[in-house]
Amino acid sequence: MKIKIDQTDCGIIELLQKDGRTPNTIIAKQLNISEATVRSRLNRLVKEDYIQIVAVSNPLKLGFRIVGTVKVKADLKKLDHVSKELSKIHQLWYIAKVSGEYDFEAEFNAKSMDDLNSFLSKKVNMIEGVNSVATTLVLNFVKRRYDWKTAMSDIKDL
Image (cartoon, helix red, strand yellow):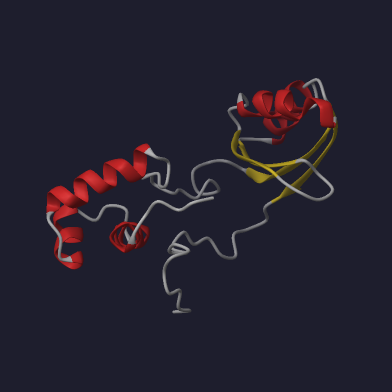
């Protein structure tokens, strides 16, 4: 995979990882570039899916009583179908095709055990090609950080 970003892009990303609300003018000043450069690069980074600018929330504090991971083992001939169908399930906010014992890992938020049971039994388990499903529940968040910088950065343990 060829990376098409440079040190200026990395600087923009790193500043936004610290605080996604940082104004373009402040980013420009800190990186010694123009605000127009920040704006155009930021638009490209978003458009090309290098970054998303979102508020990261704590689902446990927002009323979701159950947060966890679903691991899905699927028929190898139906991986694409299972992937597309999993993507349609609203409660699954993160889905990855993975190596190992399972084919997919997905993270979910549920308002209640009834909500969890419903989306597992009526949605996930009903997908043609799903062979087995395992879930783990989050008891509490020990570490949740999103400031890992970029692979081009000199990462230092702060």
